[in-house]
Amino acid sequence: MLRKVDKHSGVPAYVQIVNMIKSEIILGNLQQGSQLPTVRELQAIFDVNINTVLKALEKLKTEGFIEAEQGIGYFVRKDIDVDKKIIEIIKECVRELKSHQMDFYTAMIIFEEVWKNEGV
Image (cartoon, rainbow, N blue to C red; front, top):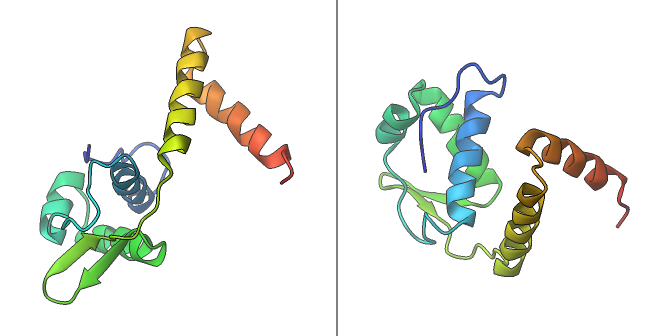
Protein backbone atom coordinates (compact mmCIF):
# COMPACT_ATOMS: atom_id res chain seq x y z
CA MET A 1 0.00 0.00 0.00
CA LEU A 2 1.36 3.39 -0.97
CA ARG A 3 1.25 5.90 1.88
CA LYS A 4 2.87 9.09 3.13
CA VAL A 5 6.58 8.86 3.82
CA ASP A 6 7.77 9.04 7.41
CA LYS A 7 9.71 12.30 7.46
CA HIS A 8 11.13 11.47 10.90
CA SER A 9 12.43 7.97 10.16
CA GLY A 10 15.96 8.99 9.21
CA VAL A 11 15.52 7.17 5.87
CA PRO A 12 15.53 9.54 2.89
CA ALA A 13 12.05 10.08 1.47
CA TYR A 14 13.01 8.92 -2.02
CA VAL A 15 14.36 5.65 -0.59
CA GLN A 16 11.10 5.08 1.28
CA ILE A 17 9.19 5.68 -1.97
CA VAL A 18 11.45 3.29 -3.90
CA ASN A 19 10.96 0.62 -1.23
CA MET A 20 7.17 1.05 -1.11
CA ILE A 21 6.76 0.83 -4.89
CA LYS A 22 9.22 -2.04 -5.16
CA SER A 23 7.36 -3.92 -2.43
CA GLU A 24 4.02 -3.43 -4.20
CA ILE A 25 5.54 -4.77 -7.43
CA ILE A 26 7.20 -7.78 -5.80
CA LEU A 27 4.05 -8.71 -3.88
CA GLY A 28 1.98 -8.41 -7.05
CA ASN A 29 -0.16 -5.50 -5.88
CA LEU A 30 1.15 -3.47 -8.82
CA GLN A 31 0.76 -5.77 -11.81
CA GLN A 32 3.41 -6.09 -14.49
CA GLY A 33 2.55 -3.76 -17.36
CA SER A 34 0.27 -1.58 -15.23
CA GLN A 35 0.64 2.17 -15.21
CA LEU A 36 1.72 3.89 -12.01
CA PRO A 37 -0.24 6.90 -10.77
CA THR A 38 0.90 10.18 -12.32
CA VAL A 39 3.86 12.01 -10.81
CA ARG A 40 1.49 14.60 -9.34
CA GLU A 41 -0.71 11.87 -7.83
CA LEU A 42 2.37 10.20 -6.33
CA GLN A 43 3.45 13.56 -4.94
CA ALA A 44 0.09 13.85 -3.17
CA ILE A 45 0.12 10.23 -1.95
CA PHE A 46 3.64 10.46 -0.50
CA ASP A 47 3.29 14.12 0.59
CA VAL A 48 6.72 15.08 -0.77
CA ASN A 49 8.29 17.46 -3.25
CA ILE A 50 7.84 16.51 -6.91
CA ASN A 51 11.64 16.25 -7.30
CA THR A 52 11.67 13.57 -4.61
CA VAL A 53 9.12 11.54 -6.56
CA LEU A 54 11.12 11.97 -9.78
CA LYS A 55 14.32 10.87 -8.02
CA ALA A 56 12.57 7.73 -6.72
CA LEU A 57 11.11 6.92 -10.15
CA GLU A 58 14.51 7.36 -11.78
CA LYS A 59 16.04 4.96 -9.25
CA LEU A 60 13.29 2.39 -9.91
CA LYS A 61 13.90 2.79 -13.63
CA THR A 62 17.65 2.28 -13.17
CA GLU A 63 17.00 -0.84 -11.07
CA GLY A 64 14.75 -2.23 -13.81
CA PHE A 65 11.42 -2.21 -11.97
CA ILE A 66 9.67 0.41 -14.08
CA GLU A 67 9.94 2.01 -17.49
CA ALA A 68 8.88 5.41 -18.76
CA GLU A 69 6.97 6.23 -21.90
CA GLN A 70 7.55 9.84 -22.91
CA GLY A 71 4.40 11.91 -22.45
CA ILE A 72 2.39 8.93 -21.18
CA GLY A 73 3.78 7.93 -17.79
CA TYR A 74 5.56 5.22 -15.84
CA PHE A 75 4.76 1.53 -16.11
CA VAL A 76 5.72 -1.59 -14.16
CA ARG A 77 8.03 -3.61 -16.38
CA LYS A 78 6.49 -6.70 -17.91
CA ASP A 79 9.56 -8.89 -17.57
CA ILE A 80 10.13 -8.76 -13.82
CA ASP A 81 10.78 -12.25 -12.54
CA VAL A 82 10.02 -12.65 -8.85
CA ASP A 83 10.33 -16.21 -7.69
CA LYS A 84 7.11 -16.94 -5.77
CA LYS A 85 8.94 -19.69 -3.87
CA ILE A 86 11.24 -17.07 -2.33
CA ILE A 87 8.24 -15.11 -1.07
CA GLU A 88 6.78 -18.28 0.46
CA ILE A 89 10.12 -19.07 2.17
CA ILE A 90 10.18 -15.56 3.65
CA LYS A 91 6.55 -15.82 4.78
CA GLU A 92 7.30 -19.12 6.52
CA CYS A 93 10.37 -17.61 8.17
CA VAL A 94 8.31 -14.63 9.41
CA ARG A 95 5.62 -16.94 10.81
CA GLU A 96 8.29 -18.92 12.64
CA LEU A 97 9.96 -15.81 14.04
CA LYS A 98 6.62 -14.42 15.21
CA SER A 99 5.78 -17.72 16.89
CA HIS A 100 8.94 -17.19 18.96
CA GLN A 101 7.89 -13.58 19.78
CA MET A 102 10.77 -12.16 17.72
CA ASP A 103 10.24 -8.48 16.97
CA PHE A 104 10.84 -7.05 13.50
CA TYR A 105 13.86 -4.89 14.33
CA THR A 106 15.73 -7.66 16.15
CA ALA A 107 14.97 -10.04 13.28
CA MET A 108 16.33 -7.50 10.79
CA ILE A 109 19.53 -7.04 12.79
CA ILE A 110 20.05 -10.80 12.90
CA PHE A 111 19.15 -11.12 9.21
CA GLU A 112 21.65 -8.42 8.26
CA GLU A 113 24.46 -10.02 10.26
CA VAL A 114 23.76 -13.49 8.88
CA TRP A 115 23.57 -12.03 5.35
CA LYS A 116 26.98 -10.33 5.75
CA ASN A 117 28.66 -13.39 7.21
CA GLU A 118 27.28 -16.13 4.96
CA GLY A 119 29.62 -16.69 2.04
CA VAL A 120 28.13 -17.73 -1.26
